[in-house]
Length: 142
Length: 142
DNA sequence: CTATTTTTGCAACATGGTTGCAAAAATCAC
DNA sequence: GTGATTTTTGCAACCATGTTGCAAAAATAG
Ligand SMILES: [Mn+2]
Ligand SMILES: [Mn+2]
Ligand SMILES: [Zn+2]
Ligand SMILES: [Zn+2]
Image (cartoon, rainbow over all chains, first blue to last red; front, side, top):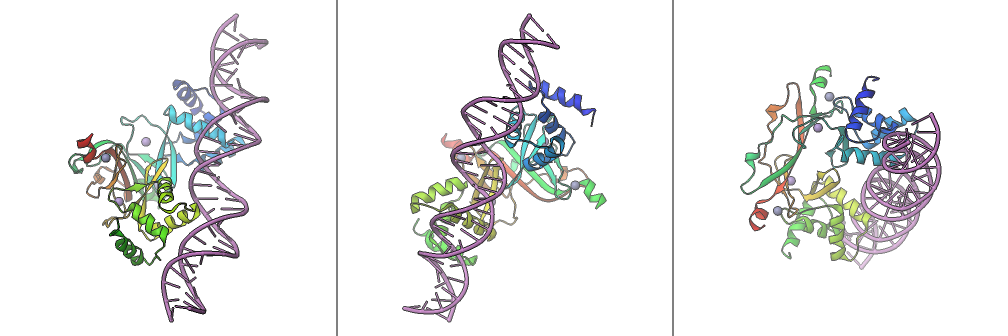
C-alpha cells in the first residue's frame, strides 16, 4: 500500500489537482483493480481511515475527480451507482462486468454489442452495458 | 385516448390491481410506444391531468406497478431513471435505445451482446444495455 | 346499500444533492 | 522557510426524494 502513494500523487498532479489527504485516500480506495464502490461504501471506508469525513467534501471531491476523469460513475442498477478508477481505455464508454458474488466490477472493453442488429435509420452515439454474473475467481472458489 | 381506458383497466385488473384514478392516468401516460418518463416528468404530467398529485401516493403506485411488472425501471445514466410500460418481452432484461434527440426509449430485444467475448470462467446471469443515439424518425426529420 | 379491504393524503423523519461562506490547508513567489 | 495567494474543507442551510405510520376516503365484495 505504501508504494502506491507516489503513484496516486502523480496521478492527481497529472490532472492538475492538488494533493489533499481525502483525495489521496479516496483514490487509494479505488486503486485496486476490480474495486468499485458506492458513495456510502466510500464514506464508510474513509471514516475508518480518517476518523470522519464531511459528506459535502466527499461529494465535491467525487465531482472534481469525475470532471478530471480520474474516476468514472457506473450505474449498476436503478438504485446503485458505483465509482471506479478510470483505467486507460480507448473508448470512453465500455462494458463492465459486475460479480454478484464478490461485488467486483471489471472493465470488459473486449465485449462488443452487435450494432448491426439495430433497425435501419438508428444511429448509435454511445452505449452502456453492465453484465451481471459470477466472475472467474468466484466460480472456482465457491 | 378514450379507447385506451378499457385497455388500461383490463391491464390493471389482469395484474390483480384495483383501478384508481391515479393508476389509470399513470399507465395512460406510459401507454404510448416509446414513451418513458422520469418520476418528475410523471409528476408534472399528472399535475396537469389531476390538478395535484401526492408524491407519496405516486411513489407507492410506482412501486406496486413495478412489483406487478406493469412498468419497469430503466437507468438511462447515473442520474436518471426512466419508467416504461413493460412490454411483452421474452427476456426480463433486454437492451433499450434512447434517442438523445426526441427522448424516446425503445425496446431492442433483437440486439444481442457478444457473450462469447467474455473471458473464460465468467458466467453471465443478466445484462443491461442502453444504447444512446438518434432514432430513425429523428434522423429523417432533423 | 353496507361491510370489508385497499388506497390515498398528510405528517414526519431520513438520506443525499447542492450552495454559500468563513476557516484551514495547499501552493506559489520570494 | 515566510508570507501572500489560491484552493479546499467543514459547517449551516435548504431542497428533493425515499420511506413509514396512520386516519380518512375510495374501491370492491356481498
Ligand atoms: Mn471501466
Ligand atoms: Mn423494455
Ligand atoms: Zn466474483
Ligand atoms: Zn428520436
